[in-house]
Image (cartoon, rainbow, N blue to C red):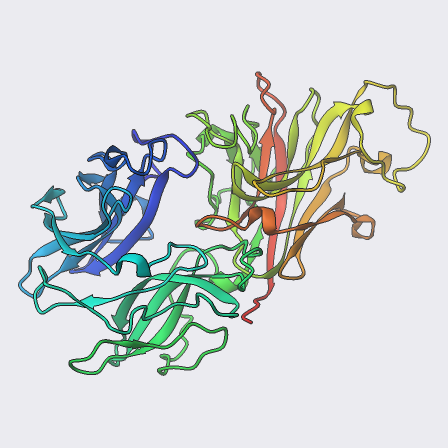
Length: 488
């Protein structure tokens, strides 16, 4: 997989993997996806050249070593997926680049080698009916008695959409169908929890499931996506399932113990440098040492980062309401050395709270609880708390305040909390005196409600563009507590 160092496109943050499809057949998992070169114009067919359509296979999807290296094939488009017909032949279908020529194409394929037959147009879609992948997202269908067509459009198209409704779940699309062990049909699709205003949806695209009725000779009939639904019976709940780490509903309680590794659900932004992360280093056991990267979370210009990496690790926000916090030991000595926590969506959409070394005259605020008697000469480098945000929509002004004297030299607790569906609270305080925790600000989640993949809550360490080794940060007692989901 692309958790290995391989020659891949390293361009705009909107480049990279788009819309992977995972299938299981004959004890093998197949993943087909598109590596998009988003530096090129959408009407330039070469942005989907033969180095960017990829196939992976694995016997064990949970074992990184089980996954093959990428096999490449040629296609001018995206949303590719494999299909096995009853005669044993395998195919790949895909959506041709819509600004080059919108249509669904099909080719016979050897999935193991990437050898592809002739691409054929099998359906031109619904034309003006489709309205993009945002708030107007929808699902349309066609059918044929032969895989090569001709295909008959469903007169009821779109078969699934929440466009032009007041429903909380919006942007429903990219759907698929499957049968359970009892023979019942279900549909799965992408959706966002935004309501019709389409402003507050930091988890961005999630997977929803709906019951489907499919009578012989008819098109399938989909139940609409709602916050509360009923449908076919579920199988009995079974938690006796092998796998690494906790169940997704359990949250995190990670203490970075000696001999452990980063949990499998932790993720990085771009390819991480192995030397940047050390679990339970000898000088500070039961912590995660992060060596600073020269680049901060915005990197070069909010779009590019180059190959040098960013020292950041996090986990997905998976709940409307949650509390995420972590301890920080950090003793910076040089200008702009910084470590902290982030509500991170992309390089140009993130909200950060960190400890940073700045001249004392850089403050925009003071803490009334900072104590008395500390002499600070103007221009002297001292630790500050700093909030700053980056987004295409307005964010609050930077908040920069000297670290309270009583907090100096102590382990700090940094916290991100979502107590409603529209805002985060960012807080800090001494880890051994939680009563002294202070809310630095409440900030709207609109600046990180954008795109495809949703917020990552995580930790970072950076020199903010300055060369040199820099001061490492030590993070410990990582906690993520799920506290509820809004469905309506």
